[in-house]
Image (cartoon, rainbow, N blue to C red; front, top):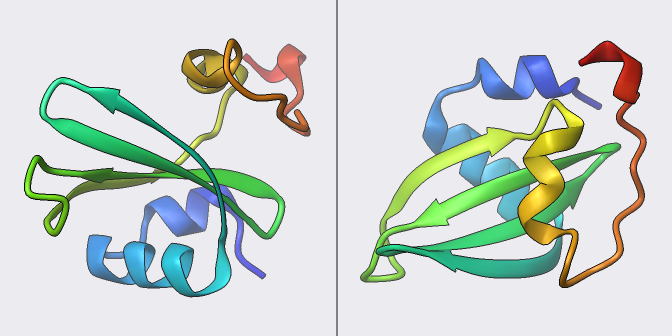
Length: 87
């Protein structure tokens, strides 16, 4: 198991590989030229930002605060293990 902070310190290709192979796909959203997939990995959420061609990964990141989940709040219910007091 890996922490969100350690995950964010991995090279992007390793982050994507880990999220895609061991994460559980939950939902997606569209923002500009990106399709953003949300995954549950171990005990935290991960976003993978795919560029407009849907083959290139532009960004991978573990969500480390409650507000990062706001874009998903209206469309799906999420388990929030992130402590709001830490913000």
